[in-house]
Amino acid sequence: MAYKVLFTTSRGIEDIVVQELNSLNIEVKPKFLGLDGWVWGFVNEPLTLARVCYQARTIYRGLLVLAEGEVRRTQEGLQDIYDIVKSVDWTEWMTPEATFCVRSNRSGRHHYQSPDIERTSGQAVIDKILELKGHKQKVKLANPDVLVRVDVTGERCVVGIDFVGEEAMQRRAYRVYDHPAAINAVLAAAMVLASEWKPEEQMVDPMCGSGTILIEAALIARKVAGGFFRKDNFAFRSLPFFSGLNFDDLMLEWDTRANWSVNAKLFGSDISPKYIAGAKLNSERALVSDTIDWQILDAFELPKIFAKGSVQCIVVNPPFGVRSGSIARAKEAHRVLIQVAEDVLSEDGRLIVITHHPEWLEMLTPVADLIISKRHHVLHGDLPAEILVIKRKSSSSQSMEVHVS
Image (tube, rainbow, N blue to C red; front, side, top):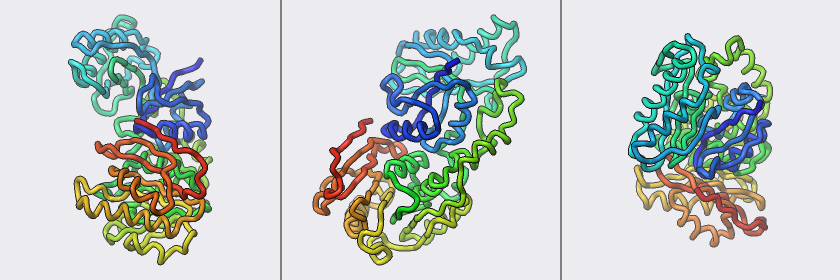
């Protein structure tokens, strides 16, 4: 039997998620129903979805889809949602003793809110099981056995079972220190994959903050599962459908693809001693401190460390100057990045930047004989941003690709 599955991610990186999930032996397609941030496919068994949720680094959630349909935006849309949820035979997924709760994400303009969707959907589940089996299913708002998701985007409703849990996958358990403007770990992983970096190539983050980008790069190089540091914190572990399976043993089996002996060429620097200390703590917690060189250094001094043409990848999250710092200092940081890239990047080198100010780089790159070869429109927190892949003009023969959000 084929089961439909849906993965949520950051808008604008759907193609990168497809690339990663394909490498995990699951065929998926971007933009489910044309919607940003949704990637979908089919699996032969639900356990495959559990494995992929555990291993992937560029997703937020994985859902086993049980129903979907059109809903109205008016108050009557709640009746549509009730009918869609009630169409599912929930007895296939819940034993009489199992607890459940409903969580909802709503996007668009509606005459109802997420709590209304959750309340209506929960009643539909209870009513369906009461009709079929004659008992009232117990609701548990914290740590239920079954986490039901009912997401409404515009006029589309998707009902499924959440395999990840209350904390989405961007919450990496290795992060014991947070930079005040830390990048989302899912976006950091996507930037590393967008760079097409290989562990034998030199990667540098000259404004590394708490080190998320380089830590993600080290873990990607070693093929470490995204859920490695949160093994007990997955919703699929408590599903009655998997009763009898030993997930501790299964995760050990899934971890066999990892190779902890890989030594990647990674260098991270920041002008702040506090941030470098935090990055070191995070890399130690992530078990990758042995393969990352951390230094206190101003970004413009990078050519003192690396000879001309010796760096293949610079991947960086520079200051935006919106919520902290100043616009002037942020603009100068962008200028320094281009100057440094011109000095140290190899002929086939790549500069990958996430920025709220792409226009600054659009003005600077031609002067340095660089070209923006790809761009992904994303959100950095709640700020619109772009991930830009920048290469030397002389080595870039491809036309620019734009991934519009």
